[in-house]
Image (cartoon, rainbow, N blue to C red):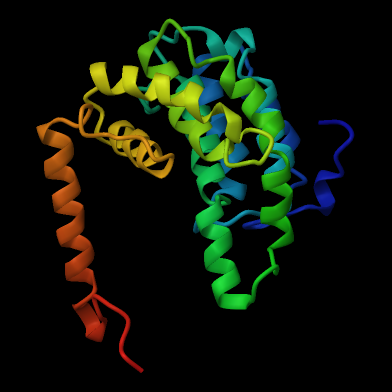
Amino acid sequence: MDSTNWGSLATACGTGEALPAALRLLTDPDPAVRQAALHDALGPVTHQNSIYEATVPVALYVAAILDHPAITADDDNPGAGTRNCPILIQLLEWLGDTASDANDECVAIDEGLYGEGIHDERMHAFRNARPAIHSAVHQLLDHDNAGVRHTALVTAIPLIEHPLLTHLQAHLADHARRLLATSTDRRHRDRVLDALKAWDHDTGGVEDASDIAAREHHARLRAARGTWMGGYAEDPPF
């Protein structure tokens, strides 16, 4: 926190000068203050799936406070007007969504648009920080709260694309199968099934009827989008 020149780092709406004060409020003793601080702490670096200069130090700070007593406390009453979800889960979700915005697929899209080997420096910086972020997330994979451990798993999946972490695929695959055996959360199930398939695991024995229905529904939507507004389901032959 203190070693970062926040005022020199770009965000979606200016510089990160105000971020330290907002980030410190994430560990305030008052759960309502913590919840309210989420917007000011994460909002400036969360816009249109983009990575900003201030994203990396924010992500590293968020990872560092995941085990803070104020964050790990169960908030029975998060405060009027706040999201009815533990702040720990919300922070994990933000880390996972941000990691997905800098995953290998995003890099491939950038290279397709701008040329192979050309990377957004901000995205590259976040990708380099993935091992440090993952070390904090990994500790929550066996959390007593199912919502926390399942969210930690979904967060870890894009993080372990880092070359130093790919050996953890088998470990996460075990957690993924346990999630699929107990969770009905559609987003979580979709994410872990996609990961298992990407890691060449057979998902035939872990998919249920709802998974198959969701997969077929998404396939129909993708096909329909290809025909909208003059688009194509496949690349034109020219």
